[in-house]
Amino acid sequence: MTYEEAVQKLAPAGQEHLLKYFDEISEEQKKDLLRQVEALDLSLLDWLKTKEGGVEKGELAPLGALTLAEIREKREQFEQRGLDAVRACKVGAVLLAGGQGTRLGLDRPKGVLNVGVNRELFLFEQLINNLMEVVKKADTWIPLFIMTSEKNNRDTTEFFEDHNFFGYNRDFVFFFIQDMAPSADRNGKIFLEEKGRISTSPNGNGGWFASMQKAGLQKEIDRFGIEWLNVFAVDNVLQKIADPVFIGATLESGCACGSKVVAKAEPQERVGVLCLEDGKPSIVEYYEMTEEMIHSKDADGKLLYNYGVILNYLFRLDALKEITDHNMPIHIVERKVNCLDAKGNPSKPEEPNGYKFEMLVLDMIHQMPDCLPFEVERTKEFAPIKNRTGVDSLESARELMTQNGIVI
Ligand code: UTP
Image (tube, protein in one colour):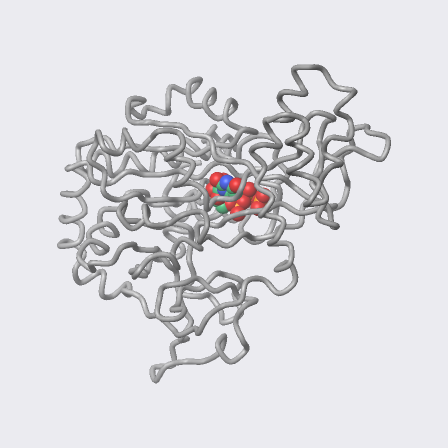
């Protein structure tokens, strides 16, 4: 793209300020900036209009789950079916590790966190340990795709190298880098973080499949004959990955995807709840529910909107391929964004000063024709580390790990 073409692209959108320092930067930086402008998706800015009200939901209806009792009854049958699929290499695992862990205040990948107390035990290591349980049971390696971001890719890959992949077979591990999205100020002006660099941040965890495709990993999927992908978050230390019982149950259900869910601890719990929206599976956030929905119960006194998601989904590949970025909503997230001050000097804000644009994996569920909600025991499978202290913190996760017999 030439300078003139860049002006033509930016001016109608009120973004010419991105070229403000063009004359001051080196030839190399000029080329780089023009490349960034060319790749810039200005349609993201339209989503700023949804900032207050969010994206309007369709008609919501409750959706039950395959309950713990029902799973217990058919456990062996599900497990056998799941193990058969794992042995046939039909299931791949996808670790979402491109986040920035802002709430934890880390400047390194979340997975390098030492969750041990009396010994060193890294979050990544524990996740590999969890996956190894299935590898041992099935007596076969499971392909593991790890999504990083431009910001943490090198740190993550080196960490795995330095620790010899925590005993995992490295021939079955594939890293890929997620896409970035620009950040904008409160007036919708895209930030520069340097004179020749547009400020960007990872585009949320909903772009994982598109980024995986861009990275050319379809060829590995084909090589292994993978038909299902189990996507999971980096920060749930009790995460069961490629769980054969979950896989077997989802296969038996005939659904295009499955989602692990936990029964709500209390009606007001701030979790995304799996339900139906216009007849299709969907996840509704606690703030999108009316008081009536939050409290309504069935004849047995059970909450109708009862099952919260824990970011562990199993997607059938052919259904995933139907999703395109165009039908994924964009979420506007307030954040502290490094930018240039009025004099063109780099500045690090103390308070949120703008917005990031993110796609979320939970929105992929609504793109699926159907979904099996699969209930799991919260204390056995859900110990997320989001905050420094209190709820969903390293402290609470350590307690749950100890309860589950993990030596820390
Ligand atoms: P969170 O939504 O908790 O985000 O991610 P985060 O970045 O880890 O933490 P905060 O919100 O900044 O404090 C849930 C999962 O999605 C991944 C995270 O790594 C985590 O596994 N994720 C999130 C990505 O892979 N990419 C992203 O752009 C965002």
